[in-house]
Structure formats: C-alpha cells, structure tokens
Amino acid sequence: MSQVSVILPAAGLGTRMSKSQAERMGTSRKQFMLLDGSPILIHTIRKFVAAPPVANLVVALRADDIDWASKLIAAERFPKPVRVVEGGESRQQSVENALAALALEGDALVAVHDAVRPFIDIETIEKVVALAAQTGAAIVGIVPVDTVKQVHLNKIRATIPREKLVMAQTPQVFRYDLLMEAFEQARQDNFTGTDESSLVERLEKVDVSVVAGSDRNIKITRPSDMDLARLFHAEELAQSPRE
Image 1 (cartoon, helix red, strand yellow):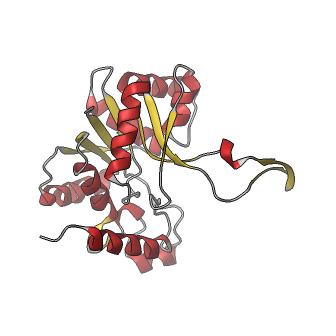
Image 2 (cartoon, rainbow, N blue to C red):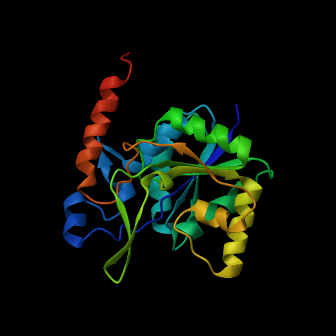
C-alpha cells in the first residue's frame, strides 16, 4: 500500500463569516469551531490518522494559533506524527510552506486536504491515494446535481452538460516532485489557483484523475453548515463499533 504525507492548510481567517456569526460561534476561524467538544481541525486529523495509507501530517497554521493548537494536538496523543508549521496569507502560501517542511523524495505522495472537511471517509482516502500512486495526480470530486449555465453579463450563453463537469473536493494527491514544480511555476508566473489541481494542470505533464467523492464530504465554511455537521457526526458515532 502506498504511503502518503498529508497537508492540512488551516491558516484561514474565516472571511465568509460576519462579526455577529463569529460571536455566536465563539470564533471567526471555521477550523476551530467546536463539534462535539473538539475543534473541526481535530476531527479532520483524527480521520486521516486512522487511514492506513497516511504516514504523517503537517498542519499549516497562523503564527498566533501555533502554540495553543500544538498543545491541543499533543493532548490527542496521535499514533502518527502530526507537525505544525506556520502558514501564509493565502491557502497557496500555506501549502507551499508545508511542502517545504516535508523534504520528501521525488516520487513520494503528498495529499492536500481542506482542514474543514472532517467527514472524508477512509475508503475514499485509500482510493485517491492508490490512483495517484499509479498516475501521479488524482483528486476527489462529485458530479453536480444542478444544471449549470455559462453566463456573460447576466445572460445565459450555454447549458453545460453535467456529465462533463466535476465539483472538486479534497483530498488532492500528487507526486511530491510534480507538486513542487507546479508551485514553483505558479510563483514564477504570479499565478494563484483555487486548488492544487489547478496548479498541476498548468504544467500539462500529467492528466489529473478523479475519484468519486460524496456529498457528505462537506466543506464547513458558514455557521449554518454546523447543523449538517452535527447530524453527520451523530450518524458516524452511531455507526462506530461499540467497545
């Protein structure tokens, strides 16, 4: 089974949340919202630590969060190494900082996963890692259920067939050397992508494959998402084997 190092960018400021929402949730940082008493970030780490292909994790955090988050992670006594590094002002910078801290061999695998997607399942992690080991690049994605329109100045120009579309999720897994080259090229071109796949695609060296994801693999970005998160978490607890 191929092994993978996992990067969790968690340096976001929660810009989608209003001041009143932040006060209601107790924090403006979505990755630190509490779910059943633990920050979402910890739930996400737990999921990856439990996945057999995962060898280690690197969490990219804002400098102000490193001390207390490190203590929180240490208290969990994870059976796999979980390191903390300082992130950047953007997700792309945070991932790049974490990549530099890994210093892997070229053909090693690296997965990048949104810190606020705590409901990724282990089977999907195993599938996307295995596919990336074969192809060099693979992501998780789902086909949209809604009809998608192409527009210009509020006018519809085309209806795009859904079977030709995929909504990208994470984890996104790549060969280390490929991902490093993609970030270097993006830096030279002053290009900012919305995900790691967009950087790798620009190299035109490999086709990025897609593993079917799940609509349960939600990205928690707003307080309203927490209602669904609590439901999914309760379902996971109910399905867990009882000791």
